Length: 238
Image 1 (cartoon, rainbow, N blue to C red):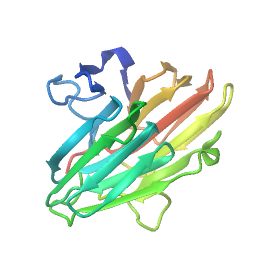
Image 2 (cartoon, helix red, strand yellow; image 1 turned 90 degrees about the vertical axis):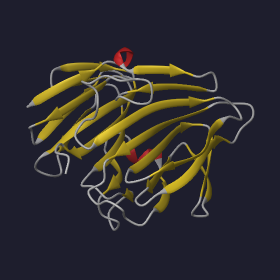
Image 3 (cartoon, rainbow, N blue to C red; image 1 turned 180 degrees about the vertical axis):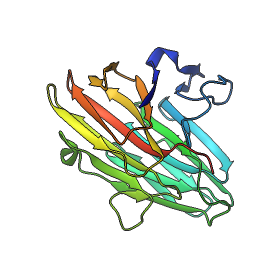
């Protein structure tokens, strides 16, 4: 088993006034050669967008883009004709493929919106762009894994062009949870949204992360009530 710890305060940080963003991996003006990616996981941005503000129309290509709102309402528009609101409990995915243009704005004028923006390298290039979003019942993740993303459009959650599986869990203090890695050669990047946990001999607190690979399974125990995002991803870039 190999491990890497990314403490919350070690992340890159950019505060633009309207946007307060923490970068787990090199992004925009934050560059750290030791924090370029974890396997195919390229970007994990922890964003807070001020009331009424947001990201104007901008392009992407050949990337799988996942947004997970944590609070507030995020308004999405794209050149495929999609106009949607995503909120806490939702997961949104875009396969950028040959190219998309989209905007993300805070719908509300009286509160900020917080969300995770995640980029995953695809295993197929130049696919037809696509958009999807699903709502999840948060009660279905208490002390267990709730799968919210997979490579299979017929499996639970949204799907992407990559052999990756994302799970969320609300793990109560004192409870334990194990996870079996889905595919040989994959690793796990676990991002602790809230609380504190012990995982494979390491202690994590709010917004800390750990990458684990060259193992088949891992075990987690919650020291406090905790919210966990676990990303099971290929370690080799194709």
